[in-house]
Length: 283
Image (cartoon, rainbow, N blue to C red):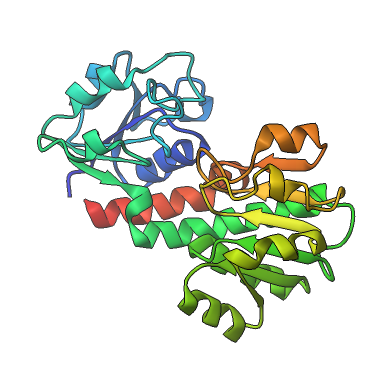
C-alpha cells in the first residue's frame, strides 16, 4: 500500500481521519482544510496551496461526505476556499477517489476509479450507529418528556431504522416501525416492535410523541402533518429532499429538525475510524 493520500475538504470526520492516517505513517496532503489548526503542527501533513498540488501528491484522494451540498462546490466547512466540482474532476484522472453521494456522471467516468463510500455496506452499517445515536441525542434534548414510555414512530426500516429502533427499545420507548415490504413488517413484529404498513400510516399518526424519518420522499405532507399532535417532535434523517413538508410544518409550529450528516457532528472520531477502516480495505 502506498503510504500517501490526499484529503480535499470535509468536516470534522476528515480532520480526524487526517490525524489518524498521519499516526499510521501516511504522508497526508490536505487542501481546503486550512482552518483545522490542529493539523498544522503535524509534520507528515502538508497543507497545499492549490488543488493541483494536493491531488498530485498521491494516487488516492478522499473528499467530503457528502461530496457536495449544492452540486457546484465540494463541502468544505474548514475553509473559505470554494472548490468547484468542475475544477476537481479533471485532477482525479487515473486516481482512486473516495467520497460520499457521488453524482452518476462521476461514478460512470471510466478515467477515475471512484468509490461512493455511502454505497459500501461495511461503512454504511457502521455509520448508521453514529446516526442512530445522534437522533436519540436530539430526541432527548428537544423532547420535554422521557423517551421511556413515549410512543415513537420510526419511518423506514433500513440500516438506520433497524439500529435506532433497537436503541429506542433498549431505553424503554414504545417503538412503532413503518415499512412497505412484507418481510420487513415480519421482522418488525419478530423484534418486538409494532409494525405499521404505509397504507395504515395516516390512521396511526395522531398517537405519536416523536417521529424519526429515514425515507427521502415526502411522506409527511400537509394532509399527514394535520393529523399529528401539536406537541409532536419530528426528526428527519433523510437526505435531500427529506421526508417532510418543512414549510407547512413550520407554519403549523410543529417542531421539526432536519438532522443531516449526524456522524460528523455527534461522533466525528468514531466516524473517522469507520472511514479509515473502509479506506484501508479499498487501498
